[in-house]
Length: 236
Image 1 (tube, rainbow, N blue to C red):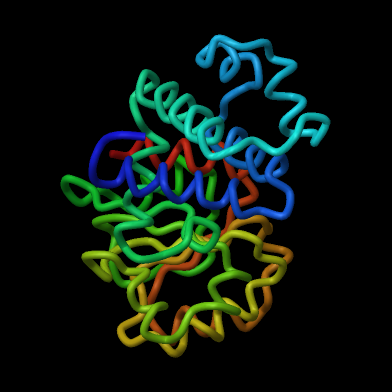
Image 2 (cartoon, rainbow, N blue to C red):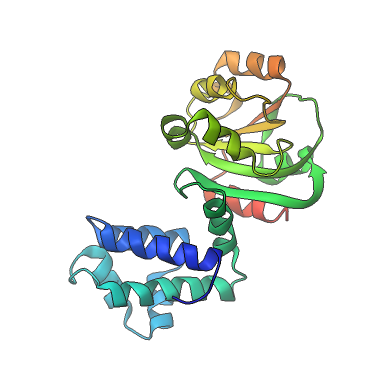
């Protein structure tokens, strides 16, 4: 697993998770699906039968050793690189910011500011509250449950990356109450927030009130998560 920088860090993270997991097959499957790679594609990359990958993931084959895990990880990364390296860059940004990839799903800085309305259009978001700015410099996609239960207030602030002029996208939202309350501890607050997984009718009524008080744009979207991540990636 050669290479330096984010690719090497990511390779070590994936290999470590698989090797130390109580269920290595399930962990391998999680990473393979995160990389949007089929068992057939990974098997072809490693020049083995797809049944080998299936057997590892299902537990029918003995847990892979370090050498096999290394080949599996290298295969995933090689496939991603040929596709443009989007997953490597995505996870690299998250890792370099000091977050686990199950807390922060993506963190990006744009080459230049873009209209907030363009972001909303791309991810099928409905704006509930109009904020104080119409352009942003980046986005962070966060699992709301993991963030609220695991991050300190200092770590929460690091979600901003290089600029507070960004949109924070919170996934795993049911009503938005916990997220709206958690945002009140941030000073300054973000310029825009998207709550993912709900419609406007499902939104906690006071979420809009808090957004108006703090001056940030609030929007909701029910676009499937993988599609949302792909659409955000296309904004670069």
